[in-house]
Image (cartoon, rainbow, N blue to C red; front, side, top):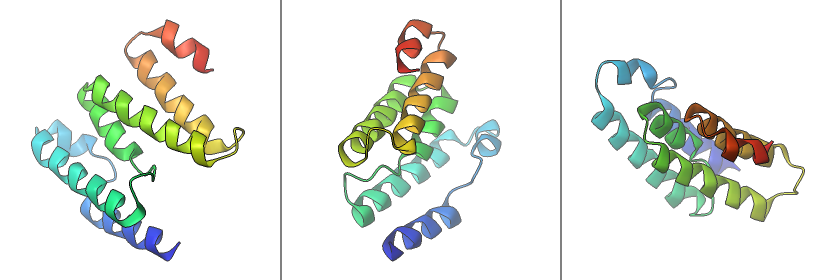
Length: 115
């Protein structure tokens, strides 16, 4: 558990909490590179099956890179489904993230079954 807090503290100091501000100034490449470094840190420190990737998916969604965001949201959901009780709130959050992604693309037919 201490390892998780250390990694999250590292993330907090290296990544903006709200990347939209930086994105508005056209720093997409810089921010994307930073998020890729963070994802690598998480995978190395917490293992490849850890689900702390939602912030990276949110960044992709904000850029309109929906396929990349979808892949990360689905990966997170799969990890949660393997590791957690089916009624766990993290599974509900993962489903909600996918639902919001589909709704933002007006793909309501894909979002509806996830409710």
